[in-house]
Image 1 (cartoon, helix red, strand yellow):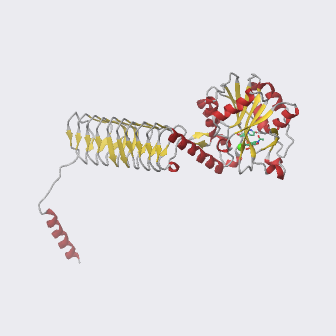
Image 2: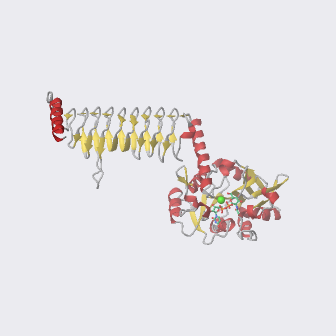
Length: 451
Ligand code: UD1
Ligand code: CA
């Protein structure tokens, strides 16, 4: 990486009218992370030490999010939304700090990679005064078109200002621009608003820089990472590209995805090598799956850790705080929430295990339920190692079962059970010989009498 200092100005004040949403556009999520968060992550990896974010006047959710995600970033408010150049100037105090490189990026272009940000900075390091990241697309509608002459970038024309001929150009502006720090402020301040929308267009910097005899270049990126989001349909198509990127990287890192198109990731999903993921699996936020584990079809995981060699599903649900040690088994229609399964523990069928600890090698029978909530407070169930909880048992928390405990099937356990104890929490079975036959006889007689 270059030793040049870098300021990034991230524009995120637009209303996002076309999203038809109460949420600021850049707070809409891709892979479960607000789009502006993706750009902040890319900037961090690309080594931009200073980041300024331009936000709208009523954007407290956005400001809070930025405070959490990038505490070092400074927010500037653009009070009137007069265009992208006007927005960049809202961060004028940071421009006066004289960084070597000044990047301007859009919060609604979330898939840009750190490598591409670095490419723009390399163009500046190589002597460009202004570098624009462009991309080729089959569907250029709505984007500014890059006008080139003999490979030189001459101007950027916005859709609304473009001639028919210019609209046929397929080389488009991603919105990401790099300015040499020496010229950034003066170029931005020279931009006017004489155009179809009456806005201050950042894109006009290109013509102004050319007029001053500065060096202006374009850098080419891929459409999948430069696509901008203005509508819900574009949000969906960006999500699809992001999912493909996550699937690709999981497979590159050594995971088997049996049907990649049916597996959905969160931005922070971590799968180690030799994890196998079957069809139709959804990863919510905060999941880590350790090497050799298998996630079987139709499972939903969120905020969970899966230990090495464990098998989850088919049809399992792991909710936040589920921590599975090595070689555990969580089978069909089992829900685990805020519960630890120690090495080799199993719950194979139809259970709810919440706010619990299940000791090593214990076996939770089909239909076991931890009653963790009394309508007011949550309570904990502790089960020691090597215990066996019979099918259809109800464990009423708070309750502790020791090691090596055996709970008879169908029990309601309300009291603690000591190590190696056998607990029955149900009434004894009564059998009367020929009782069924006698009952049928009596019922038939009653029916005959009535008819
Ligand atoms: C912009 C570019 C266009 C480019 C496209 C790429 C301009 C004039 N146009 O068009 O060349 O092809 O992005 O996606 O730059 N914003 C503010 N304040 C404002 C206006 C916008 O902060 O006053 C922010 C928005 O939040 C958004 C970004 O700037 O993150 C881009 O604004 P938007 O209105 O979406 O521009 P486009 O029409 O997409
Ligand atoms: Ca846009």
